Image 1 (cartoon, rainbow, N blue to C red):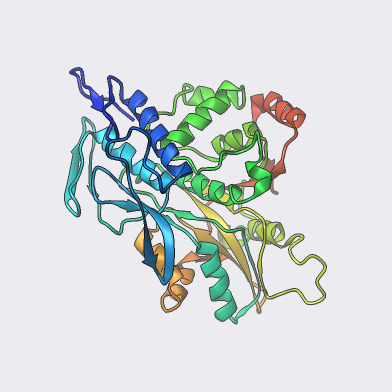
Image 2: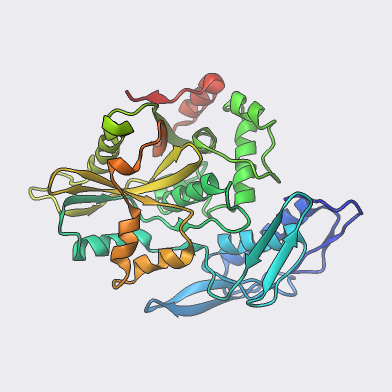
Length: 388
């Protein structure tokens, strides 16, 4: 976050009576309140005068999943991470909006206009469950379908529009990893999906352990409080220091006619299909694998690959989650009557991916402490695998 006021400002905590002289200290303090709440959603935050309340609701016929209401306005978030990030926006810009009202935020170099509504939810869950149901129910032109492990969709907000896609896709990847015990064991990733400021702090902490010194130098070892883009190497760095066996693969040039990348499509298909049938005599047409999603980066944007379709005519189609897709559009996937249009927007054939270069990041197991040390030591010149 940025502190832009020239005069001395004081920052009161929205949950208790503490007043901080530094917005970064207040951010850390508020996160402690929210972390306490996450550990026991039904209990009030200790010594908090106005703690955010967890409530239950019925959405899409599903009763009782927890919701978290902002104490500063009427926004309701589906998880603690989204609430944390929302409250940080209040703290950054120093104002709160009434329910359903326009929040106008002006700063020295930019102006952002945000709308907060009761049903504005940044994180959409059950995305892969909905994709699986759709392909079981429809998509009969697909001979085989492989889907990644359950993953949440994180949408870009007005606060990070134009620069936050790398963070949002990393949140999607982490949402899948945290559901797997292998990755949440001691010394690996934390239980909660971090907010953007927390991701920035994780990257800085990774640099402090010595990984990717060239990348750290590029950012002057400082990400927190900035709007700097992140990419494949920053995600690799965080995963590695948390002992996740990360892999960067660089499809550095087209391998097909018309600047297409058939080698990329074949590689993704192999990633999802390997070990998926477990020796079954008649493999199922639709397979929900245990593989995490793939982080996909190209010039100017990044997305997450969550599945692959093999058509009956032999063509291959990737299924992509885009952080640029608004939550309202993403929720259409959860409704059988609107799911087909939603899936159609997710489908990408070779003719749709025609940038010169693509990079992918995958998570493929856990490193031993010695392997982690070796990867950090070898990262002085961080190189991706190159195909071709």
